[in-house]
Image (cartoon, rainbow, N blue to C red; front, side, top):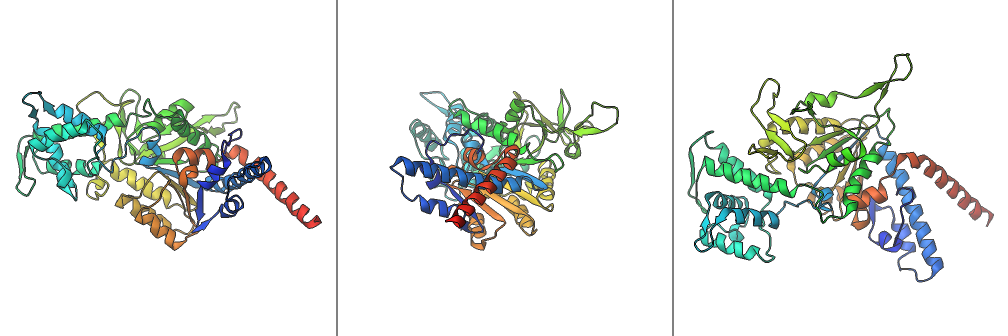
Length: 470
């Protein structure tokens, strides 16, 4: 908790907070002392003081992790949710409405375009239960009417849907060709139809990922700026901190711009920024003001690695000055060039291609370093390749995994809970488990941490002395 943060309702914060290390609740004692909301002023004052002391102790613990030799953050969709980011475990309704309205022309005799048929057939093929996915003309027209209300989203992981389209496209030549599949639902598609469907499906997702949205609370974006500020309070003699994100949005980049932070993001260039992963091995220094020849390390630098691509990345032809064929723009590009967005969560084959192979390799080599701490925020561990890398890191005794999730219910986390490994810290509940809650309440500013530690040690010494005198 930063100095000056006000606690409006300490009882609610304490009641909705969970902090577990190795299967043991670290705030159980404080919660037991305040199992009921206090009604008297003295009780409220004791509760507030106990909760502040609990948070101060928590800051000391997390501050120790922040001073580890290697510190990394892995952000999932939950970290962007408060800023209006879409969750793509299902087809977002706003995105489906946009696609179906563009895909049907006319009112009296509506024409269902081929690319929207392709979209729904791909959804049916990517869904384990395709009964609720419209595939015929009549069903698609009926779905458009249903979308005017508040229907249930299609139970299709959107990345799985994109993966299905990519697989169909890969089966056809670069130009021309027709794909025909007889198994229900049948499909007969040209390469041009699949290209159009992919372009619209990724462009629609990119529009939803332009964050923060107008209706999102200001605190959501402030949390991104706060996390950058707090990361940069790490001692300069330690390795640069890294932020790995599975999200396509540009919240980290926007926050870095607002805070004057330099991001080493794998791209080089000024007017034309292209992917050159060797830039991750670069660092920034500035000369001293004396003539002694010494240089100082620039303190406002963080590494950013977008493991699943970005809404600002575009695929281009590979050239000598762009060997990987990937270009980054400052905002969502207004062109028909395909966006570099990772298609699926369970895609070992696609993950071998650039730039994903290089980014995943760097993620793996970073978190397996000695004395490494990985903060995983808003991620449900639904990607097999990411889980495999984290399992590899857990084989290293000095590795610490910090999971931040309001409801960590995945099988991966359940297995970790059962092991009761003291290297696994889990923050959950609404107080600590959201991105904003964790950054505001649990992540310390290390410039205050030393002073806070001294205050806590003095407080405990005085408390012990009082007990002895009694």
